Image 1 (cartoon, rainbow, N blue to C red):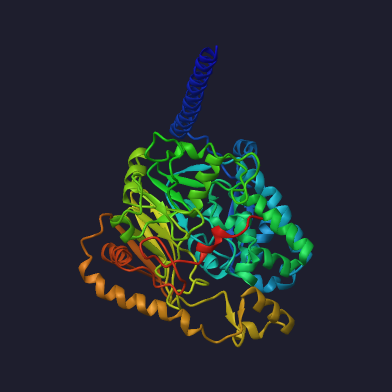
Image 2 (cartoon, rainbow, N blue to C red; image 1 turned 60 degrees about the vertical axis):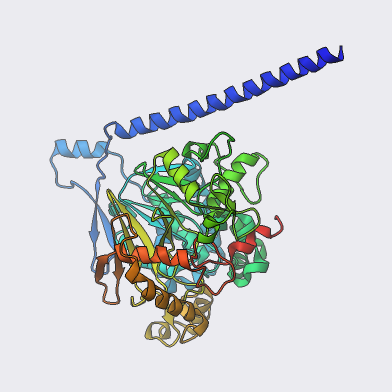
Length: 546
C-alpha cells in the first residue's frame, strides 16, 4: 500500500510539472503573439490627424497659438472642424513655465500650492505610465538621456538646445533612463517638469525607472542627508505634507517602464542586463520583461510581486558591466554574470552575458546609465555597451565634467555633450548681476534650491579626479585608434553656442580602453563597470527595508 501511495504521489508530481511547463509555454506564446500584433500594427498605415493650431514664436521666445484656416473656404473649414482640437493641460503648462524661469517662482516653489499642484500632476501621470508596457518599442530618431539626479541646470541645457520649442514641435522622441532625484537639490522641480512634458506629449517623451526611483533609495535620509529626496520634500513642505508629496511621486515611479528598444536593435535600460529567470535559457528575452507587474515597488516589494519579477526588475535598475579583471578571473559564472562591487545582491555582467543577450534578442547595442562619467558618455564591452550620464554635478567629477546624451538617428549613433566651457545661463552666483536683482529673502531660498551659489569656486577635491583622467587619456589615445568598431560622431556645445564636431572613433575608443586599464578616477571608494567613474550607490543595497 505504501508503495502504491508513493507511486501515485510521484505520478501527480510529474503531471503537475508537465502542467506548469505547458502553462509557461502558453504564457510565452501569448507574449509572442502580442509582440507580433504590435509589430504588425507598426507596419499598417498611420491614421494621422491634422493639428488645427499654428504656433508662433514671439520676440521673447514665448509660443502663442492660433487656429489654422481662419480664412479658409467653407468646405475646408468644415473638414478642419471635424478634427479634434488639441487641448492644453493648464497645470502641466504651468509646471513647464516654472521650469523655464524658476527664479521668478521662488515663493511658489516653497509653497503648499506647489505641493498640491505636484500631487495633482502625479495623479494625472500615473495612468499614462501604467498603460505603457514594461519594455517600450520606440523608433528613431530618439534622444537618450542618463542620470539627471535633481540637476535642473543640465536638464535646462538639454531643453534649451534639443527641444527649444517644446517636445511637441521637435522631431523625434526623448527617452530618459532613470535616476531623476537624490544628490542634486532640484529633484522636485525635475520630476514636476518631466511629468508635465509626459502629460503634454505622451507619445514623444518616455521615462524609464532607475534604482533611485524606489522608496528604499530615495527615502534613505541617513545616507544622503540633505540630498535625499525624502529629506528635500520634508524640508520644502514640512514633515506631513512633504511625506505626502514623496509618496505621490513614488507612486508614479512604481509605474515607470523598465526598458526600451529602439528600432528593434538597441536595448535601453537604467542599470544593465537582467539574469535569465528560466533555467533552460542563456539570456533574458525582452518579452520576459512584459510579465513584470505594471505597478511594482521593487524595493520594497508589493505583495503581488513574484520573486522572479522582482529579480528581473532589480537587475534592470542595478546591474553594471563587469570589470576587466573579473572577465579574466573566475568571478563570473558560465552565463557571464557575477556579484557586483555594489554588494547587496546586485550583479554585474561580462562579455559572455552581452554576447548571449544580443544574440538571443537579435540586438546590436545596449545603452544604459547608472554610473558617473566625467566625459558624459563612455563605451565598454567591445564598444557594444554605451553608458550615458546626463548630469555634470554632485558626483565628484570636477569642474571639467560634462553632461552627455545620445541621439539614435536611423543608422547612426551620435554623442552630444555639454562642454565644460559652456557659459551657464541658469544657475547664478550670489554676486552676479542677475542674483543681485533678486529680493534678499528670495536669494536665501534660491541658495537652498541650488539656483544661486553662495561660494565663488568649486572645491579642489572635485577638480583633481578630472585632471588625472585627462592625463591618463592623453597617454592612451595614441594607441586606441583601431579599437572602435562602430561609426558615430561626438558633438560638444561650446561657450559660444556653436557645435564643435569631431570624429569620435578614436575618442570613444580611448574612453573604452581607459576603462579596461584603470579602476576609477572617482573620489568615492569602490566602483564597477570597467573602471567607470562610480557613484556611491554600492551601500544602498544593504540598507534596512522600509
